[in-house]
Length: 112
Length: 117
Image 1 (tube, helix red, strand yellow):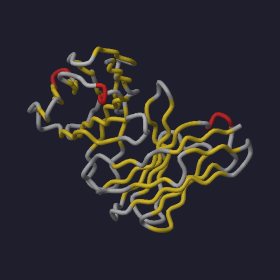
Image 2: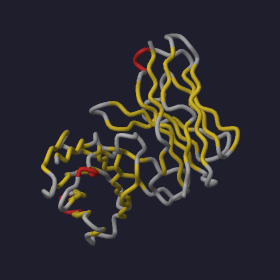
Image 3: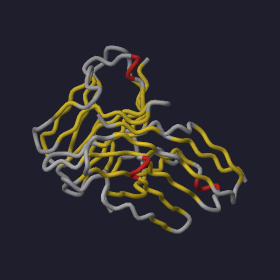
């Protein structure tokens, strides 16, 4: 089975902190994604990567950056956390051109 | 631009009832994929089905069935004889079929389904 693991289930951070959300997948997938989920809005794509060191902006990249130094790991970085970044963050991975994705269990981030 | 609409925000039914979750999509692509995911209270999205745009056959998997109609741009999901364990948030999603690179999923807003005993 594909396993996508996010480092934390719950996080509480203070406004202005630099926050790292880590995601690791064990199926050698080329593609990795970061989404945020908010009530009534569904899932929205923040950033994605289709290869090591490659990244592309999704629909809502403002206030975020990403890092992919190794194929299996994709990190989401909140440079200076703000309260409007309180959300559920979901990481996913997939193979090229097959469509669909496998998701991690999510990280619920609260910024206070 | 691609868009997915799940007009039903919440549905509540009594166990053993049949329930249909609606999904309407918009895309200019002739080749695309449609998906359904289930998100139980634990939070992880669970893949249920993928359908490509050239395959309009309905699919049945146990108590689950899917009705894909290109004419109305809909991909509806029916649970027959619902059970309490079906309670979850269900997402419909759409992706393009690029020749290379990553396929991005566009999600609907989700439908929260509650099955009452």
